[in-house]
Every structure is written in structure tokens, then in C-alpha cells.
Image 1 (spheres, rainbow, N blue to C red):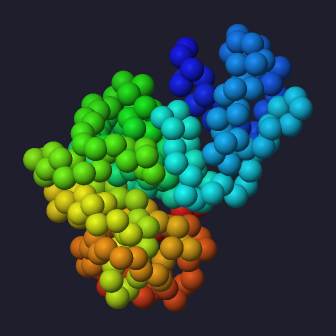
Image 2: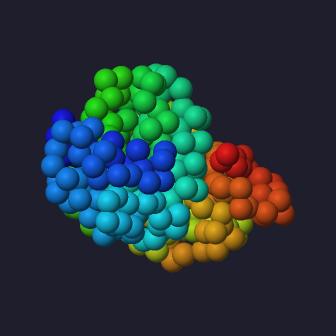
Length: 253
């Protein structure tokens, strides 16, 4: 087992139990306690956990702007649930574009048993998907962007445009009834819009706190969006207003 695989397993143990013990992890993975402490330090740096003398515990509020290393998920509880709920909308045989963003790890853990062709610009997603025997993985190239731990540039957009997808899974930044889906970066807006154009069906994943608000660059109007997956913090009034304009709104459990 390499270090990336070990750290991902540690993350999964942490998410399940909310606490971890250095000695137990050291024995389980047959590595030194110092190696485990270095693994935990990576997560602590990104705000995912807090270390203690003999272990660590999960932080319930993970900073939403944290960048992701290839073997570290930055998901908070709502983001994880949204990603998993979105993954349930896929079926075996689908060709999928998977956008970079903080719902990614939730999605990939929800599709482990599906036979899919997945293109992604996310290194975090690719790092997990490469271990799934049923997934044919295609990496979208381009200029690397640290804030998304993936690729986003004109060459990325040109590469995506060559393909047709059954489903596009898009990470949303802001969404409202007037401007639809918006993001702060023009290149990201163009990339997401291109993926939508190349897909028969699209799914936008976004936290309820980011709904009923807008950012600088428009990606798509609500009528171009098929499904919005969000958390249960969304009010009934806003949910109804969104659905009147086209998309189905799904609240993650």
C-alpha cells in the first residue's frame, strides 16, 4: 500500500469514527507512529482534523476554501452527502464528466460499483477513480490550478469539447433564480458551460448556503440545468422557486 492509499483509508476511518488513535493506526498499517503523525499533520494543515497527544479528532466545520492534495478530501459533512446523493443519479454504462470541486470525493465513493466511463479535470477524483476496476478513467489535461487541485484552461476546454457525455456532474459556487449558475472565475465558467453543452443530462451540486446568491461569471440559466443536488438547509420557498424554472431539486439525506 502506498502513502496515498494509506492516507485515504485513514480519512475514511476518521469520517466513520470521528476519532483515530496513532498506535492503532500504526499497527493496522504496519508503519511507524511517526509516519501516522505525518499523515495526520497533512489533514490538520487543511483543517480537517485536530491532533491530540495520542491521536486526532474530526473537525465538524471544514473550511470551504481549502485546497485539496491528491490523497486528501476536504469535504465537510454536507458536501459529502451532496456528492453521494448526486452519484446515486448515475447508472452503469453512463459516460460522465466529473467537475473538480469539494463534492468530488463524495461522488466517487458513491459510484464504486458502477461500470462507467469518467472524464475529470480533478486530480483528487482521478486519484481515487484509478483504483476502481469498473471505471474507465480519462484525464482532461491543461494548466494546473492549485485552488481546485486540477486542470482548468483553454486547452482543458478544447479537450472536453471533443466528447459527448450522458451526464455532466458540475460543482456549483453560486446559484439563484435570476442568473442561474454562476462562478467567480471566467475560465471555470467556460469550462463548466462546455461540459453542460456536451452532456445529455446535467447535475449541479451546491450547498444551500450558496443558493439565492450570484457570482461574477454566468455558467448556465436554470432552464439548462436538469438536477440540483443540495443539503437540507434549503428553504421550501427557495426550492419551489427553483423548480418552477425547470430543474429538479434533490435534498441529500
